[in-house]
Amino acid sequence: AACAEEQAGLSDRHLSLSRRAEDLSGGAVAATWTCPGEMQDIAEERNAFVGGRVRAVHEATATVRDCLSACAQGQEKRATCFRTSTSAQTRIQTRLQDLLALLPPAVARPAGTRVMALAPLTEEEEVRVDDMFEPDEAGRFDKESPVSKFDLQEVSKYDLSTLRPMMWLNDEVINFYLKVILRAAQKDRAGAVPDEEALHAHVFQTFFWNKLTDKGYDYKSVRRWTKKVDVFSLDAVIVPINQNQTHWVLALINMREKRFEFFDSLGGPPRDVFEKLRKYLRDEHKDKKGSDLELSDWTDITWSRPDIPFQNNGSDCGVFMCQFASVVVRNIAINFSHHDMPYIRCTAVGLRGPGSAARHAFRSTQRAVR
Image 1: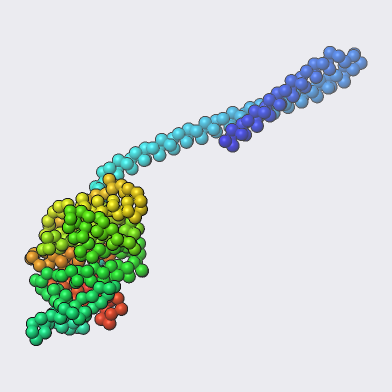
Image 2: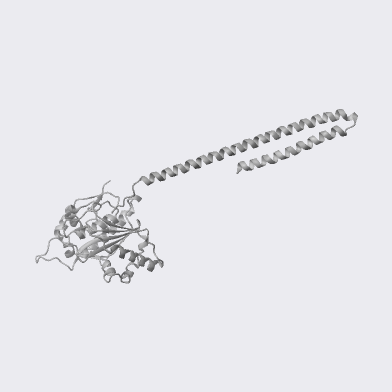
């Protein structure tokens, strides 16, 4: 634009000088033919002067013409350079797209990126485990007196006794366990770097799924469960599922990655879990946001070996389900197998929630390896 403006100015000057040259030339001729004889010498001197001025004007005009020519040539060079640069940029972009096409697709992971190691029990925790696993003189465990309280959730010695080897975990222990790992994730986020940050999640109680699906599908029965929770502002929603009251599995609504995930430590199929989770999320959005939710770009993932470990008995499904929830919510790479189940059962006995005299939840269960 600046070059074009300069060229226009030079063109105007060239035109002005040309007209001036014509005026001067006309004046010289007129002077030659109109002057009387006695003024001939003066006229010749004037003609010589005017001729010099004309030549100067012509030289200036030639200079302007040269400047215009140089400006046009420079503009052409810049245009050529721009075309060359654009062509090179197009070739580079095409090459990058070709290289990206050769890369393998991104591999989804069932859990996080932080590397954590299982830590041994302290002496105090071992004493607590022995005490919780010891029945009274009648061989019974107390069901009435809570031994741990956290976030309106209580567990009795009887509840904790279900953590003994080869026992099925009951709902109270699982609900307590999930609440504690959720609080642990909140604490993790406080000082974490972005790549290691735990998920902002919500955990449903164990009977949520039964309420939702006992009559086939009934959103109204769980509509008020999220009265104080905006699930669409979260990274994930944890849904524990007890299949036929005999086997625990985990469903995950991964808002961050836009996918529904299913964890089964026996490798079973999700059946209608994904279908009902989609219905629930659409109904929840319609009810809380007043609009339809588009889920066409969401994916369904059923995790299996070798991405997740499997149980090797018929009693550890509840422990596996809780551990799957823990590593997902806390953004931890899977760090356990069926060999660790007896140990994890013992560490779960020590869960007392934040501020306990024994320890913060999971302090001795999982420790960062830096």
